[in-house]
Image (cartoon, rainbow, N blue to C red; front, side, top):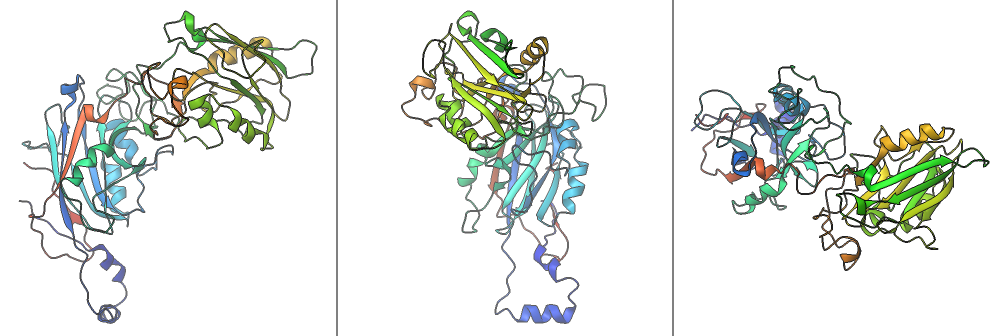
Length: 481
């Protein structure tokens, strides 16, 4: 068994008070007992080949900490602590160095030697890392990071509700039992660090095994999100929905005629009704959504899940930054209903210098929460069409029309889910999702953490440890040789 030293970190707060002050402070307590420490045994195993995947898992860093440490949070940019180095190149040193300075950390280790190995190296299929780490009720969370090697910037990490850290203790401060610790797999996920543009998995020129060097990929949009397989976007958008926008001749500047033809019955995408369609003019500071961030709760969820734009329309009407808006249904219907496959929606809307951008949103009904919308270069919904020629508008529309997953409900197989469109028995019946807006991809093809690696945690109550030394951080071993 490895040698260990243990620190009770609150004693660091007493350094500099002077020995007399420390004695008085401790004497004032009727009883003084150090906080109980529990040691946990963690095993990370590469099981990729069992699921038809080939990838290494990099060496990494693990820490136990309190709620003040935030390594990452879904929908927010990289925190700059060093996860980028692991995610892009498997380089752990920046993260290790920065966490050593963090007062919120209790125990910290590098795991880099596979079980049975004799030197630091990444693990391939069938190999495992194992390490021991200490935690206590005031520092109950375990966080770790290890790169998925055939990606540009994906890490295996633990989270609770999209925020870094898995809780090792119950609410009453007692450590979880081994049975309770089995739920760690539900908190184990592959996270896209949002720092480098994703390439085809295992084949990108800017991935670790490529000869291009470190930190050379093109910059990404910059928010942490669940990793999705870049090979399977749903991209017959311009075939499934033909959208044309032209200036209305003889009308005031910015008067646009919008025509949306539902041609899903003529593509290999499942035929689906669309809408109703919500359209709004607005100033450039506003957007109906932003890729990589959570839905703002203004009504996009109802539109995306039920095809009901009424709540979003009411929010727009109450906000001074939005101009004219409307809800349109199929031509000659006389009501804002959904347009069936083969149907057409057309309407006229007015932009202005104060409200030069146009956003549209309509539900793809054979989905859980997918919206047809524009996505501009900043990941928002608005296109600056005021004052543009018909040719300029046409180019902008073709470049920006997208399917967008609102991130509010878990995706089911297209056209077969019991919580989709007309098949759901009540609004909002589907399973909630993690909640960031993103491009829509085939639901059956994400990169799933359990297909790549497993993580198990058990208590190591029998591991001996000496009396704590004030001011020195607990340092765990680096795997079993």
